[in-house]
Image (cartoon, rainbow, N blue to C red; front, side, top):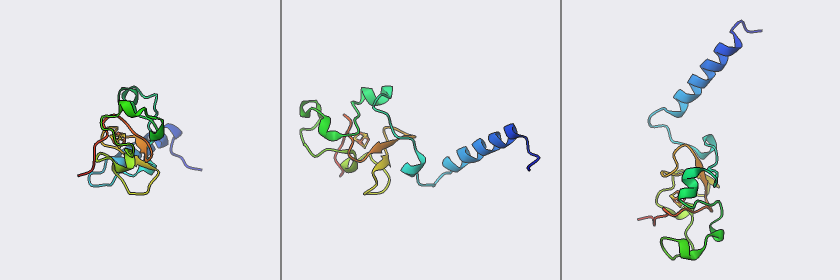
Length: 107
Ligand code: SF4
């Protein structure tokens, strides 16, 4: 059995995890991130949804029906992943089939 006090172990673990996630040059992986909740105040403000098919086309900034997070210029991570980081919602993963009012076409 370890002689390290439990509290100290938890503190060291938290610091190590934070340092790992904040390492410059380290690619952010959606697996590391909690999923963005549509109930998050920022998500609500941007009309984020996990399912783009539920969006009223009249509320889209562009009328294209095929807008989703996977084809947005602001999404990060790997093509084909179900959940991906997004520049608008740092620290959270968005659904590839999601959408928000900030959607922008890839160049
Ligand atoms: Fe999805 Fe783009 Fe909105 Fe991010 S900015 S949530 S990738 S539509």
